[in-house]
Image (cartoon, rainbow, N blue to C red; front, top):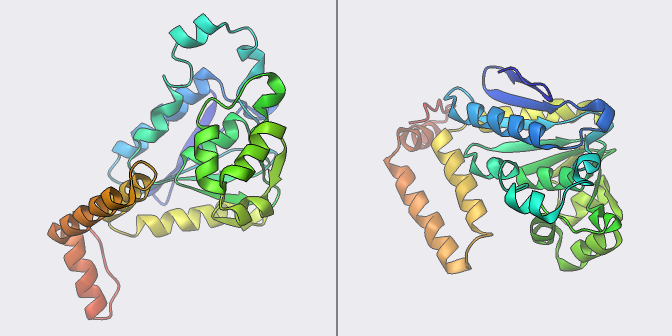
Length: 259
């Protein structure tokens, strides 16, 4: 895959890594970058050898927001007729395998929203999160007012959306926005370790777990529990369930075949 605004590689033949690559713009997100990102993630998702993906940026910025220089000239007709954001940013929601955001530096506006679209966030100790759109006369438009309250609660999300202030890595972890904080020089090592751990498990169970956790934000408790229960039951028809339980009983390491 050849791209202009992202770098794509694999690690250990199992993990797909996408690095946002607009350094002069602090990885500001534009239509081309988001289309390339969606294409790369879909290709990894379709590759049976890939079990997990990582999205990252530079040490200075995961993504400092959407490309305001381009957006400044848009009219309502431009964004509405062009289906701005919905058309290509939302592609990440169709990815079935886990996607980890490895965040260092600024993750602001669209960058924070992109990180929240991932399945979990590992943050370097220099990470800064924020939704500063209010300073531009607009509001978050890629899920910031919806995903942020689900992660950190109404009061803190309101604080960030209405004041535009940034949240450091410590506050982000304490608030539930990120899963863990690591030293900047250990960010990719830690993220890759987490991704490889996911890859060692059966893909059917991993995908089912992701679907089930996501369902918690889309349905009521009773419907969510029933969805979980049916996936739990269904996994008893897989070879990986037989292998995993036999390995546990016989005190050996399980070797999953994703079947």
